Image (cartoon, rainbow, N blue to C red):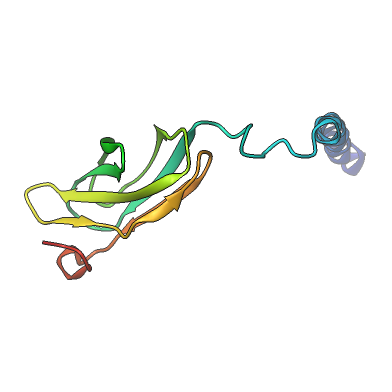
Length: 130
């Protein structure tokens, strides 16, 4: 009797999961190209992992100027989203609070992209620091 009682919730969860998948697949079948450039959100997500003990401020550098991304505390992770309406080159400026400043290499970024940035423990030995 105990085994039957334990398996009943599992069956209910499985049915709920299958029904959720069934409704989601109908959406995909209607528009197989749902993630093309015309439907991408006009934003870029930036995932930052600060392995250094010091806090940092981040800025996006693009042909249209310098945009503040945000602040990440020492030994913390954060996610940010910034408006990014067209395909363009971007680099990220990393300002260590009361310390050096670095800039990543330029990269082509499109709306809807997800960028990952990891800040090293030994920040001063990173290329591009001054």
